[in-house]
Length: 287
Image (cartoon, rainbow, N blue to C red; front, side, top):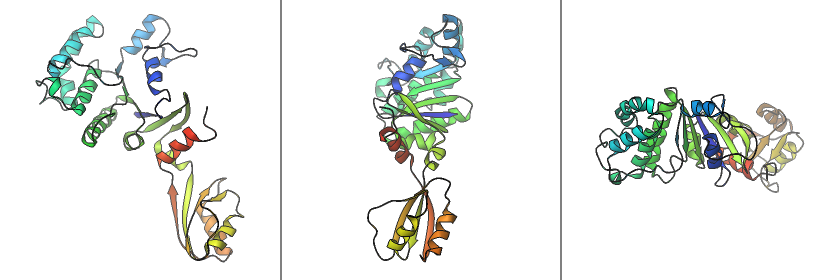
């Protein structure tokens, strides 16, 4: 599962992630991770967090050390002492996983931004987590770096790791995520597969011989809203939004019955960007 946590800057994505990881305390409510309370008894919290790998904002490394040495130092210092040997044994494995095995001996200061991001993901994988939480992992990357990170996260999710990614980049979320949650003003306003969110507002593109007559016919159908301004005469294209269970067949039948010749009728769906903007800026969005 690759879950995209989508929202504009300032929506509360990083704050939510910090609460999930126990880094900041909520004013109210509860936070559960893998069925355990994050702010409950210390034993419950530690048991949950030991199954989570996280990268919040840009990773910090000793730039004068190699990628492998950085991971080895973190493996010794981070997490329970009894798991230290297991973490150290995974250093080469996670370097291979993020495709940095050839650059493992290079100093981090020689790494590109994309390589440093992948090294940060390798660090988050040292504990063999069930959940990987990443805050804006493609932020600041060039197209090649974004593609490398996207491919890596998709492969991790396909292999059974639950990957939770926050982002404000709509194209990235739509390209790689199985599920999307949209955050606006600190509240989750929509959730589901990208295709389902887009399908929430179905549209039709219709080519007709008489735009004025077509608009008059469509204006009499409940659940059909025409896009555009005042009716124009002559042939052309009209776009409509469908609601209340009205389907394309009913629209076509009504136009033909009204004397409108329909030369083409094709469904269109809002892009994730359209849905996103309507959710975070629409009248129903929490303020």
